[in-house]
Image 1: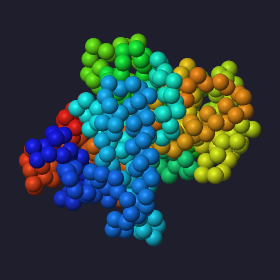
Image 2 (image 1 turned 45 degrees about the vertical axis):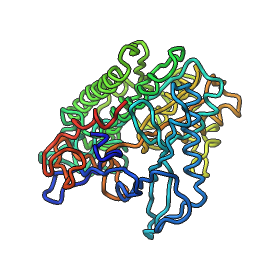
Image 3 (image 1 turned 60 degrees about the vertical axis):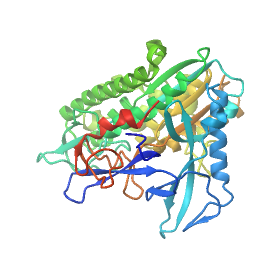
Image 4 (image 1 turned 30 degrees about the vertical axis):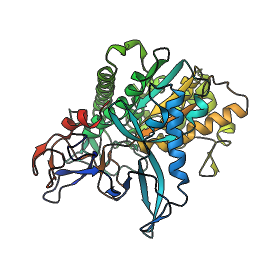
Length: 458
């Protein structure tokens, strides 16, 4: 239930259940007329905040003013069939961060975004007003996410125990401590994956539905496929995984990517209705040139060095990859005030580069809007930086720019600093709702996936 009878919106805090190991619970949080913490990391306010509030200093409110202005720019640029000032409703969800000394500060603001029946909060990276200034007739939307989660991605050692080695979103670098005999996934999509599909696809589809029919969209499903194969590279080099386990892992990843892509497309089809066109969907893996070498990879000396893979991408005949991997150009791209190293040195960097290339490729044709969860904000920085470097040095001419929209998840971990991928509550949780806010019974067992359709309205 997204709008309880008492008024306001419901968001959910997820947490490990103190009643027992391995179990989880969800707590509804009513977003009404009063400011309140959804979790220690997220503060709801029905209006813009300025000055001091407890230990937080919001200053002049510049952060939230900018966030709301970008919502108006997005609604205007996409020519949404609603008043841009009404789409930006004036409420905010603030991201609260904690320093090592436990002092707190405001990292950013998610501005209200009302469209149709949907009430969302979004953080926009980049400038949609500039990207959409000429009211483009073609817009690409890039959707993607990680496979599995801390609960759904499973590897076991030679004793049959689950290993500490997590074949997850951050891959595996350094020494592998345990020999891996099996790696794969829980058969069902995890709650993290289901939630992300609804979060991103519902927002994207809703924007498409409320755009003029003259605006043509293409939707790129960017699911890490061969990138996930690569997450075993260190284990293969160190002979800490069997060939059989690696082959199974590739099969599992391939199956998982298809399952996740299908789920996202299903949500889009449901949102778009008669406006859904299968021809709009583009499913592409930027690391496809590595297919043969990764399929044939074996433990030990038959496992390639990372640099060998980088060189294969550099020499694949693809202009974008050649530029992204050019040592001289890389040193002109800055992150946290420092230039990138001339050569990639980790699997994560190669996989991150594949996402950057996916977005830049669409920019060659026109405007691009990426829709993802907030943990991907760092990658969007690299998209912007590479756009600047390639343009300034006359390497490419883009027909459009890019920006990213991060809708606020309606389900967020209660634990300080946690992200859903690492704190997936699982598919069976207890409802912690003593006040009857949600309409569910206190202590009731539910699959949180069942709550998603009514949580992400459109």
